Amino acid sequence: MNVPETRLVAVSNRLPIALSRGQDGWEIKPGSGGLVTALAPVFRDRGGLWIGWPGGADEDELKTLLRPASQEAGYELHPVFLSEEEVRDYYHGFANEIIWPLFHDLQTRCNFRPSYWYQYLKVNRKFAEAVGFHTRESDYVWVHDYHLMHVAHFLRELGVQRKRGFFLHIPFPPVDIFLKLPWRTHILKALLEYELVGFQTLRDRRHFVQCLQHLRPEIRVSGRGPVILVRVGGKEVRVGAFPISIDFAGFARDADARLVADAAWYIHEALPERQIILGVDRLDYTKGIPERLEAYRDALQRFPDLRGRTTLVQVVVPSRVGVGEYQALLAEIERLVGQINGQFTISGWVPIHYLYRSLDRKELLAYYRVSEIALITPLKDGMNLVAKEYCACSLDGNGVMILSEFAGVAAQLHRWAIMVNPYDVEGVSNAIYRAYSMPHEERVSRMRRMRNMVRRRDIFWWVNAFLQSAQASGLHDFRFFEDYIPELSFESEV
Image 1 (cartoon, rainbow, N blue to C red):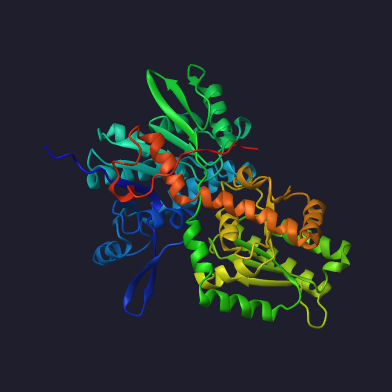
Image 2: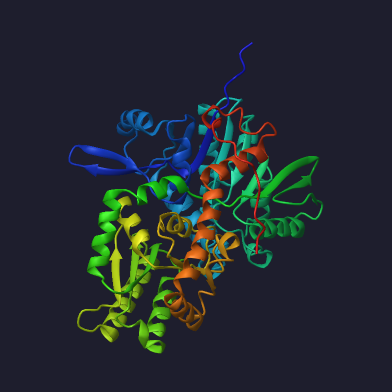
């Protein structure tokens, strides 16, 4: 009897592609964002399926494009098509006006509109139907992020029997904030329909368990370490902490390429005899960009040594450009950049170089490689892969990282980064001067340890850790992963 092949099925809000309309119609390019950056190296040329919303292309036209895109990616792409109303209320509404701000401790930005909730349920059922149609019982279904917390609930309603796990890429809020969600009990119940629920940090897992204990006092929690058991209604659910990572070897290899080295040289030639401070962020109010600019202004005021000897390169990647709140944030950022440059610019030196655009991979890696200081200060972040990418690309080991204590990556890098409270303008300002003044030997020692951490806990380790926790037999059943089964270990959270 033939044993059915086990395939890994990723289910996320978006397919790992980006659509753009060219002169000859729709064109498909590789997608961006943390999830695609993390998972694409694992899926590439190793099979499996990815189910998600493709964006706003015509259904018939897209189907003709997906076959060659799947062949190029090395795995199957299956679209879930959404109407304009569904995108408005499920994605822009429930996901981005309720869950995103609430889970980032910014509940005053929430819009708890009931119609958002009902559309969210409708779309989650549509995703569950797609999973049932495109997968078989032997597959492992891995659902990603806050957009799709109810997929397992609807799989059960539809009678679709699949092994299934869920990973939350953003933070999980503490009890006092989570309780503000009108559908809090429904969300927790839906998450318990998965066999394994994963979080970025032990802190996020602890918040989740505390919310369960508050709202579902009948549950029982047992176990120690990165994965614990939650028992409810005769069912066991594994709950774990799995810090996501990057393809360290891929980033380091690409950063060492001649084209990147040449681009890095040109950057430093344009900004000579100064330390480059780098910020790279998507336009979002959780990233703390205005607070960071105020901190750099304060550092220039209080530490005159920094004038002419440092340059802040702030990259802001456009996001949700049609939303009024984001337009206001962009205006504030640009106002601050103009004020600071107007206040401190002297002949031959401009304090802030501001880039409002996406960078291609070569340019991004060149900035990583050439920057002596990384300023990574989100107000709240699930992980923040920019920090890990910066480590991988710091080939000379001379980089210093200033890191928000509210970023998930702080649990892994806090021993060697300069930790800051992003709301503390003077504290971040002091950290900038400390990083600028840090002796070479200390810089090298700190970066070597951060690079070792990211190298050991790369994206392949992350996938392996999650799937080994989900499958008692480990990864041996997954044909695409049989060549990489490292020893499994974890770091404790700060």
